Length: 281
Image (cartoon, rainbow, N blue to C red; front, side):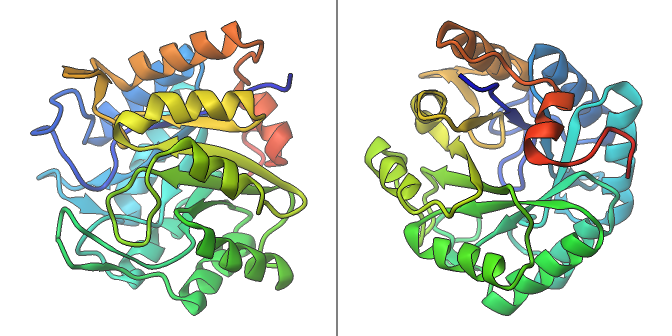
């Protein structure tokens, strides 16, 4: 079977150390977590930035510091977030694209939050999605298109039809979010979403909370790729907090090998995703 790309989502834009004291928040902590995950088998690190107080931000200077510190340690692929977190405007979130990262996440639709700002809207209109994609295309940053429900496949296809993304299209199915507009973390939803993958697409799976382990394992069996980390899940097992992001990556790499899928190195992941060689940007 093909190599497995493991993404480590290190921090996120919602919970903080009150949820898990091992969550990295500041640039040096995030860079060290990225290095540890790289050693454990991750090829990509998904990055969120926090200010000095731990509040989510898309300040390009903080992002640039994080990316530089990560690259000083290893050749892992850097992926910044345009999702940000509650309280950030679409314009603020777009600032992440100014950073010289390899990839950037791109939410493919609007959702209403039921936690962390209940009732607030995570707005992603079609014109905003197109604008983000165009900015990424101009900077040779590959989008990780995050799909939370079937309806968001429509906007994936819209970007493809308008030549705003390049093959292979990298789609991340995010399941288990509590937001209105998102699907529960159940295998039947993943199996159904895969049926709608456009030609030329590669899929990754992010399972939130208790869905992380079963869904990322299922993704391996189905030929997809897996994202784990403290952004999506703060526990190692029920009631036991994860000690680190690397602990979750280590388990994923171990399961992958048992299933006959060797974790991809960053260089191999670059070839699969057609990102270009390390340092080429």
